[in-house]
Image 1: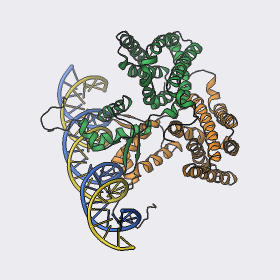
Image 2: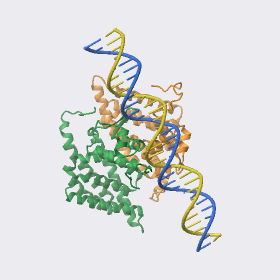
Image 3: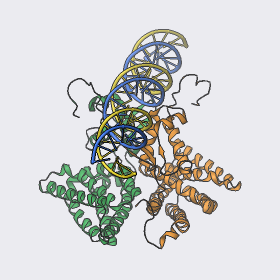
Amino acid sequence: MEPSRARRLRPEQDAAAPQRVLDAIRRDIIFGTLLPGVRVTEAALATKYGVSRVPVREALRALEAEGFVESKPYAGSTVAEIPLDDAEDLFAVRGVIESTIARRAARRAAAQFAADAPSTQWWSARRALADILDDGDRAVAADALADLPELNIRFHLGVAELSGSASLAALLRQISGKIEWLYAADVDNRGKQSWGEHRLIMAAIDAGSEAEAERLMAGHVGSSHRGYMERFAAPRDADGGTAHRG
Amino acid sequence: MEPSRARRLRPEQDAAAPQRVLDAIRRDIIFGTLLPGVRVTEAALATKYGVSRVPVREALRALEAEGFVESKPYAGSTVAEIPLDDAEDLFAVRGVIESTIARRAARRAAAQFAADAPSTQWWSARRALADILDDGDRAVAADALADLPELNIRFHLGVAELSGSASLAALLRQISGKIEWLYAADVDNRGKQSWGEHRLIMAAIDAGSEAEAERLMAGHVGSSHRGYMERFAAPRDADGGTAHRG
DNA sequence: GTACGAGCGATTGTATTCAATCCTTTCGCC
DNA sequence: GGCGAAAGGATTGAATACAATCGCTCGTAC
């Protein structure tokens, strides 16, 4: 299972190269290494990550679907603008998706405990969530706030996994990148408090309380929403218009 | 330009081959030509559509992101099951996305009419919607219900275009395939009535009535939801379980 | 007769190669 | 001196070639 480094004498066949490149580029965009408007060429990325252009192409297509880059035929790709205008909509939709996910997860947890033998898949997802919660607590204790955006999105995706709804999980995955983007911009403000709410949500899911899990998740997302808007949207609220990208 | 039947002296650079292949495969899945569980190989698809494996790979990746196929490394892709279990969630999320889109579209329409010169982009989107509405009316009049699923999704995507929210449009595009899938399964039942509601929504948007547009769109999606569930989910409701795919 | 393992065919993942298109620069003309 | 058009370089899109992996079948041992 593990890619031993001794085995890599010639292969270069990772079978995960596109995913690795995708994560790396997205990370660079989210944390500001790649600034909006910058043009990215396939050849440069291929050289940077030590692969050929084919995996890079797949990664760029995925990033385009996620809204991180914009491409035109034969004209290349550029990094998209930070979606400030869309933040309001994004939070609204995210609230519904995540609330539904939380309800589903609680229902499924109850079903798993009722059954004689919980499914292996469910258990491994639950264990992964426990680890994520511990890692996040350690990061908070050590003031390592830079680690929180990734842990945050992994927690939410983990809950989606636990919910068992493939459609909802795919949808959340679709917008997870932008959520992380917005989260990273506000992590120094609300990061610690926000992380603390995760254990309450987890407890409600474990208890099988559908309504409680849904309510807590809605509140969790709503708080992030308000915090973000107060910090970033307030100055632009007066003119009532959108500030950039027409 | 045209793919001559002579030998491929020149490789025919379409620059749109992946999109064409993507639409074709998705269409085959939606309309039942490709049945769930069937294994699809890249080579076969490449031969069928007269392209190489590279564009086929891109199309398969996109289909995977949309949830139409499932892939494992080195193990190939299979057509996913019809998402009956997820239909409930899908309709719920879709309701929020489309309601928000309708509200946004009405707001933007009012802004366009208030300005001296509406933007070219807005006008072309509005014109396209008018054509779609006419085409749909003709299809209904001619009892050509098979045309409605595609026209339906084009109408809703067109409204998203009109809303000006790139995030919401991308999100709707993400689930549009499955919406069309569900719609096609129920078009003989609710197709005509459902189509008639589109002009009411369009009128509310043109009038700039945000609340009205949102209300109508929520009702429109909600009706589809109820109709679909009454037809497909009711028989399975008694046993309280999910029937397939765990 | 059944279970286990090695060999083989089939299929995917990536690299390399070549054609088509776009963008920039420069040359010619007004 | 300014403007327009064509040529060249740069970059993307697709096809072909090759390496790595998986699933299946056949053979063998128990």
